[in-house]
Image 1 (tube, rainbow, N blue to C red):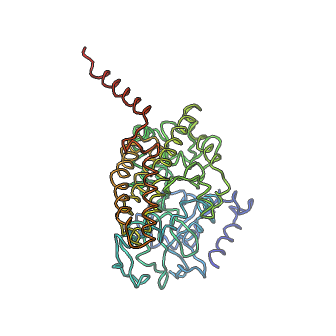
Image 2: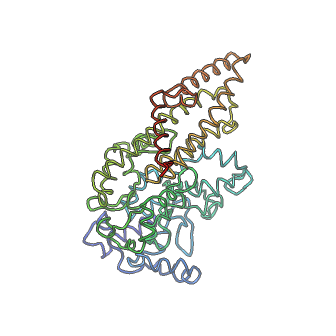
Image 3: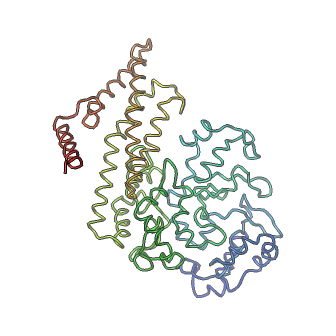
Length: 485
């Protein structure tokens, strides 16, 4: 195969004669640009001025790695096609990048980022494809049509399943696409240029929080906005010119100390830890589900090697980053606060809300998002609940409270509970015995939830001791601010 033959020649070249073509060999490149790349440049430096200049400013250029080295294709590659005498591919996949960047590609492939394309067909995609969309976008790869709302929305962050047409052309519904979990024709998952914008692959760009903002923003995962509200974000934007972000070596506490970025905390090197491309190795809660789980639990469900890395190890990794700027008590106390918010959401809203939803299902129209309650519960956990948890994780009080727990509580008490009560009442006297039983079970659970310690205030049954504390706090507030001086 041409790609493998080229790689074998590269490994045997004088530049690598003293080393095997393993991890150490990655530090070296060819002595000069290959003949194939020079031929590519004869045309592409004229017709693709921007791409040519971006590549010319890259480290690839300095290492004599060019067009052919990245875009060469094997005989059997489904997306390969003959161009000017060479088999090439438009797509450059993690498998391609991994020929040189072995460690980085392996870490990325083992991460949740690379598996983001597995959202295809999930509940989220039902929204985009059915509730929001239709089959009006017809392409060769989708003769029966596909929803433009999914193509232009979900797939652009999570990744499409790239479909190859004749002569290596790519179906327009699936490409262009730089979704981080893109499913590639060569069987690999993900795309490196979701973060490393081609063809320059500038380290300063990939370390900037705006890079993460392509996907990590919006009502359900507003990490970029959360970061900007936090003191970390404030410090970064006030001191961006002191961040030394274009440095090859970028160790927090050594090369910069004014502020952390997303990359600092989740990926970049510390004095005792190397760079990692598995963004889950420093996260001790997975806040994506309706109820937060430990990351090794979600890794196990996806068949990832992280299933063998307990959350305590990951938390220690993150604390290693934190202590580059913060003393130990600060770091430990932060995690006490964070864990407490996760627990509050779980016991007060997450678990009872999920239990009530499951009991309500037999009384609802059996169509995803065919009921008002579907939307209410989805937004409680998928939008407001996530915002609250992400806000606490990244120290953004407004997102934790007003955009988070306040919205959860408002929707829970003002929308969710009334809808559930009405649903139960509607079926308590149904001619269908199964419906009556389901309605009674739902009503019983509603009474149990609303009379529990967390919710009985809503029924006017607040614990007398708590009521006394609230009365004393109110009187202290009034005395503090209404004194007659």
